Every structure is written in structure tokens, then in C-alpha cells.
Length: 263
Image 1 (cartoon, rainbow, N blue to C red):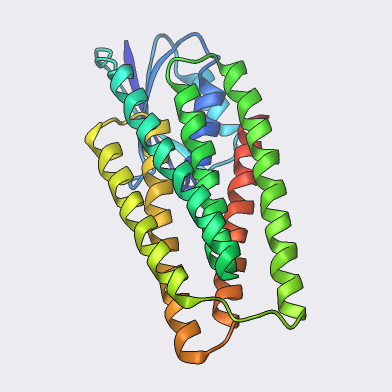
Image 2: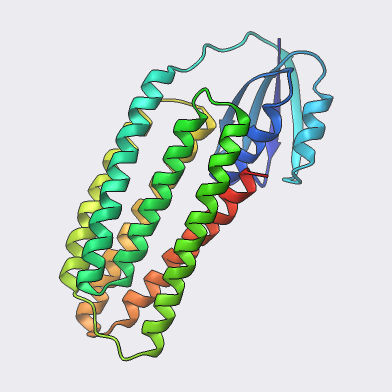
């Protein structure tokens, strides 16, 4: 058994990790993958020559470099039951807040809340893909990724159209109280989700991808809270529309990357 370490400078998001995983999993000599996201490092545990693995990674054009190859033993597999339990919890939290934020967003006329609700739904899709990834076949992952990606893209485009409609029409100022209170609750939900994911202490790509998406959500929640405060002080709809447009852009970007996984 060998361990080859790659430095992949453009591996800076969860979708690129999943692209690498889907590229390497069909290779029979690949036995295990471990990702270190902050260090842009991939460790491949494999049998035989590393050249086919290096060639497969190179086809993704992510600026990869083989650092070294050493003999080693295959690490102990992660607890799949624990991963599934945690992912079901965070999936439930995110989907629940999708319903809450979508409902209160329409009531309060806040595009920020509506956009954040779709971001929550996008995360639910990512967690669903992560559940599929636990012990699933490659073909099944790709089918789910394609359906999820197109669905998420459709939601983002609908959201953009609504932002533009409100931008050019005489729409009412959103209710800032709803924006701040609901976003604070969503922030708490995301912090619980991140704690659960980190509790697993897994180096698997799909678990680390889930952690990054949840960390990004915490930033988005803070943005909606800030927009609510600015709506109050400025008595204007513009902060809400701006944050809504930004979040929809993130959702659309995530959809494109999920679709890349299905190729």
C-alpha cells in the first residue's frame, strides 16, 4: 500500500473536492482519499503505480503537484453510521429553516430572508448528496447531483428575477424586525449544525464539504442581520435587495459546481 500526497492549489471549495473524488473513485488501485482543505492537500492511498492517479487529477486542470509517495498502511475507515446520523440532523435543521425563512420572507417582504431560505435549501441538497456519498456507488451520486444542480439553478434564477422586479418597481420596504429575529434563529441553527459536523472528526471530503457550506451560511446569516439593521436606519429596501442578490449569486454558483460533479 502506498500514500501519495498531492498539493492542489485550485482545490478551494467543496465541489472541487467532490470532482476529484468522482474522478478517482473509478480507479481500482485507489483505496482511500483524505483531503486537507486549508492546506490544499490530497492524500491518496493506493496500490501500484501513482502515474494513472496523477494523470486523472491533471485532467481536472486544478494546478496539481505530486509532493511524494511513501509506503504505508490503509487507515481505519470512518464510522459510516455516525456520519449518516449527523448528516440527517443537519439536513433536518437546514430544511426546517428553509421552510421558516421562506414563509417569513414572503410575509415580511424580505428578499434577504427568501434568498437565505434558498441557501438553506441548497445546503439541504448538499447534505443529501453527502448522505448519498456515504457508501454509495459513483453513478448514483452523479444522478442525484445532476437533478439537485438543475433544481437549485432554477430556484436561483427565479430569485434573481424577483430581485430585479422589486428593484425596478415601487415595492414596499421589508419588515426589518423579521429579518433580524429569523436570521438570528437561523444563525443558531447553523452553529449547531457546524458543531455536529465537527463532532464527527471526519476527514472525508463530503463531511468537510458540509462543514465549509455551513461556515459560509453563518456568514450569510450575518449579512442578512446587517441588512436588516441598515433597512431600519436607512428606511430603505436597497440593503435587503442587495444582500438578496448576493446570496442568490452564491446559490447559482453552488448549482453550477454541483452540476460539474455530475459530468
